[in-house]
Length: 476
Image 1: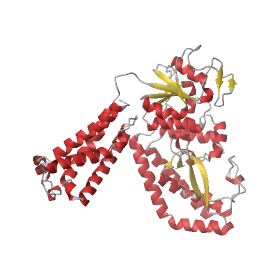
Image 2: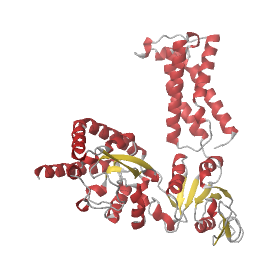
Image 3: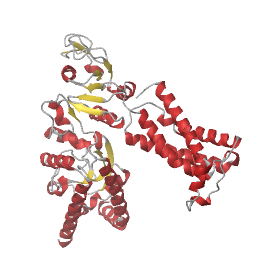
Image 4: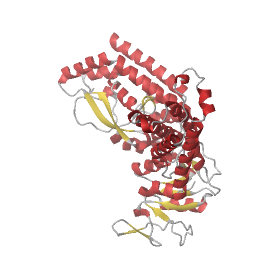
């Protein structure tokens, strides 16, 4: 894929030419006569323009559609599905603009039949044009190393079979001399080995910048693969790199000895690098999952609306404290989002250390009932509707608690590769943060086996479990 002016000129010129051809085709007398035989379309007047009127129609349509596609003229790696979705969105914007212009000014009106005919044509040919422009050039794969571990960067540079263009790392780990590194303030850092600037180790790689330049490098260098070389990364740096790979359709790999920090398939013992599963969901399952999330959360909020009022009143009457409890939780790729639950404890500062409910003396009387019947979770349906959570997935954990759980379970970060859920395999098997090892085993099993059908089974078991708990609580 070209990444400079050649791409811009080709994309703009291609859009203009394809739109002009679509308008000419739509105004063909034989085409319009054939389309007029369709019952609904037959009501539209068949009157192909000619002369100056036809020129104005072509020029106006080309100008509006070409202008609507400005976001796609910037050269950057994109996934095919992203190209199709963005192109379709711009086509509808352009068609709406043309219809609006015609409504307010008849002089520049594009006939309704022409608009109807060019819309499906543009929905097919324009995405196809940008996908064709995206085709890989006849060149070898292009890869960069991204990380904070000089030794690992050097090992990958020496052993990787990929053609590496360079590496990106924080300034503090960029070696400027044979045996010393210089931090951002210019102070020497003895003991930081010279990792990747050539010299003694002979890797010959150039530093392309800090981690903040990753997206610029992915576009400017047309990168196909990013090799991760993190030791103890900051969460924002590590998952920021993965998120950039995901957004730009770039593959991510990792050294087999560090595969326990990311989501991968079983590594090949003979392979120098292992593929990272940046997007473990199949697109079809993803669409079904999101559709189910919206339907489930919206139905729940509507059906349970009267119960929400009763619960809020009970909480308020017990101790006059706030009705809702807000907390920051960890989301997909290590990001954070706020969740809301019905408050079940006294409003005091809590500890990040997980505590079992039967040992927690801060739980209120109303709160204990809400916890036993899982009714305190109802407000999280709003987070599901917004897209921060899913109905099924690894349970979102308090961000303050993450550090404790990471220390107890080395592979804890693998949970962050999928969207957190209201329920999951760990919940239906009564595994909580009190036992992070068991919780992690169930969560990783879900990550490996996840599918829309698997989600439905988990939801069915959870609903049965909630029903049983509610009956037991009412019986007591």
